[in-house]
Amino acid sequence: MLPSSICYLVEGGHQAPSADNLQPWLFTWDGETLVLRSKELSAASEVFGRDSHCEALTMGAVSENIVTLAADAGMEGDWDLSRENDTFLRFKPRSVKEQVSLPVQHEVFSRHTNRFKFDGFDTAPPYLQELEGLSQGACKLRVCTAQAEIDVLADLVRRASSLRFRNRILHEWFGKTLRFTRREVEGGTGLDVSTIDLPPGGGLLLKLIMDWGRMSRLNAVGMYRLLSSIEAQAIRRSPGMLVVLGPRSEGVDAGRLMERAWLGLERHGLAAQPYYVVTDQLVRLADHQLPAELVATADHLQAASKTFLGDDADAFPHMLLRFGKASKEPPRSRRLPLDRVVLKAESNSH
Ligand SMILES: Cc1cc2nc3c(=O)[nH]c(=O)nc-3n(C[C@H](O)[C@H](O)[C@H](O)COP(=O)(O)O)c2cc1C
Image 1 (cartoon, rainbow, N blue to C red):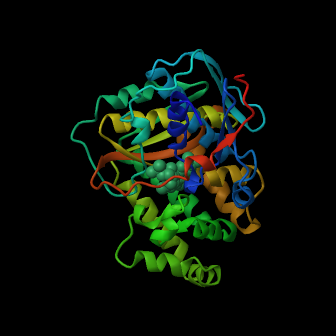
Image 2 (image 1 turned 90 degrees about the vertical axis):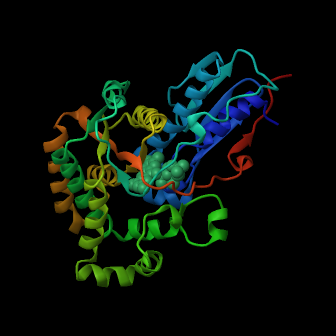
Image 3 (image 1 turned 135 degrees about the vertical axis):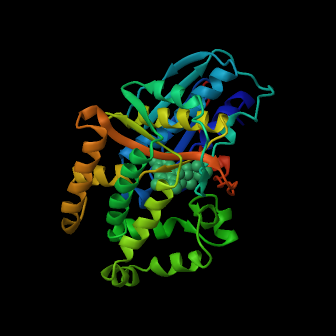
């Protein structure tokens, strides 16, 4: 059994966001050191690849939760946040408390993705200025509240999303991650469709188009254009957008920064939804993972992204987030039971 202070850190790490709620992490405790590792997900690695940018970003978010909780609870010890193969964090606390009462009210436990409509703010919250000043390593944030800037980002999402809807591997993968019934949701992973802002009948439509044969026939008459425009429209109507920028190799730092900014937004009463689609298409383009017929469109996406965000190597968009005042509290996504993500390790304590 984990000591309660370590369990607290593990539970906080386990609340991190992950692409399609896959939770690709494992924790071990040997009596002295807490270790965070990434977990091989065979199906997902076909889509995102082992050692993917997506994995680094996610593990950065988990690390940020653990570091934040430990700092706020006054837990001291030796930290090693340098990545080594599948290991992303090692923490050897100076003392281990077996019985402590720790604040479960911490924002790490309430952070969530809100895919519903956001209301605007009359005057920009002062926190936004603070956000502009946040950084982690070589990664920084760009905050956009001017409609012209938000429109450009919405257009990037439209272009990227139109690519995704034409990519059989990505489309079928997305279908596999959707959870429609209560039983499926209770499995603890994947995307609960009730967290998606769908119009009446939208769930049924989603189910129907997940069949690639049907989707490709519909794409021939422009379905991908319609769906990507709907996605972009949600951004156009949002009061603010956040871009996490940095060198492409710095996915872990970008993930830490994303999580810190997201926790801060919620602390200041704002809700957020991340959009990974632009990053994902740019990574696939650079790594030659796109079907040949989509490369020219992806080149245009890349050119448009560089025109807006800059051509420097340290201006790679790691993540886009829209934010604003929540108009609706979304259902909270589930997690796997803790024993599925905590690996038993040999004890060093005696
Ligand atoms: C790398 C990464 C990519 C994500 N991409 C998207 C996305 O494109 N659209 C979206 O709505 N949510 C996205 N999410 C949010 C996850 O779907 C969400 O974190 C997960 O379902 C768990 O839900 P929670 O954030 O409410 O805890 C992403 C999260 C991560 C870490």
